[in-house]
Amino acid sequence: MAQTTKYVIKYKLNGERRFEFAQLETGTKEEAMAALQAIHGQTDDVISDVRVSKPL
Image 1 (tube, rainbow, N blue to C red):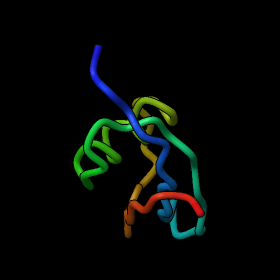
Image 2 (cartoon, rainbow, N blue to C red):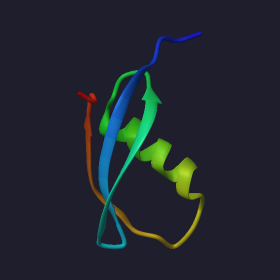
Image 3 (cartoon, rainbow, N blue to C red):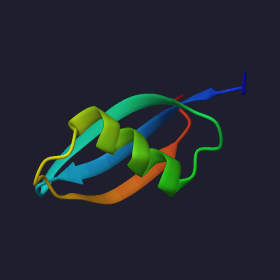
C-alpha cells in the first residue's frame, strides 16, 4: 500500500472558488485533478485553476 499525505486542493468549479482535502501520493496537479474528477463525477462542470499544497 502506498504512503499518502493529506493535501489541500484549491480550484475553481464553474468559476466559483472552492477547496477540498484529499489523500494523495505525490501531490501533483494531475493527481489532484483525478481526485477532483472522482469527487465531482463525470459532469459538465468546468474545473480550473488547480493548486495543491499541504495543509498547515
